[in-house]
Length: 428
Image (cartoon, rainbow, N blue to C red; front, side):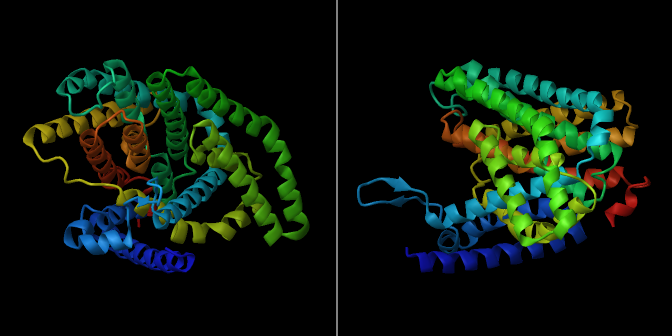
């Protein structure tokens, strides 16, 4: 495939993605009460093998080819068309999480840091223990974990994957509803970020146990901590140079390019140590200067990111989802149990933790509902488990269904809980 053919295919892919996302979003918001982020995830599943692949399999494979290319020497490489889409999706996600960090109210976090850690701990410990306990029974089936994976490694992996929160999705839901800056919205963001950072560290421990290498876990955990400390205590004062440049000349193209360059570098650093690029972007956003500088920076990059780049991320991930692999009553029973444990371990546990931390019941239940959404962060950790030979495609599919169900229920529950509150106007 020539470079010219790749460009033509990319333009057509982007057209289909953007049009489908807009149509599904309009219908989803009007008739199902879903936010843009959930609608875009559904659009991705629709464009993948679960719907378009069933209705028009040849068209779906031509438009979004997932088969690897075989070179003359027999080596396999990912399809370059999908590799381009993947790269664009990651750029959109990174910039969006930077914008979320830029909106993050660090003063509220400092005031409620103890509460955030408490909610996060509940959202990790409860689902982790339930997932590890379930592994004792699931591992014995023999068709959910790859051969050679012991009960201990399987329990660590399933516990970590049950503990994940869809942090980008949680952030976007709060942002779309205009409650990201509120006290309980900030608590949810802080707890979600701590939750996911911890879950990625747990995943590093799992991979270390599988590969018999403690260096992987130590590098991920140590590197992540070092990055946060360096950004907060060294980066924050240094980044004030951007606000001084803005005061002299405004938000020029050169200044914007410099900021984006720093963003890409920070995202690369956290991805290189194994904590995933979005956290590097988010932490950098929290350390940026505030005021008019932050407002103009958001104005410069927000529309292109949310309207063009970010939908590619959700659609790309949805293209890899197949729901039709769970095809027996026993497997559907396992799926139902996994969903129930996920809701109890994450949503219910975080709700009670938030209540104990001082929130009223409505706000505590809203935090629980938001933390219960797994979304595409779950798909990321599941793909890692599949690629690393920890889980089978069957368990992968079951966990994907759990992620979809817990994410789909979030928006209507949040809308219901916020009725009659000061935040209801943000639902319009």
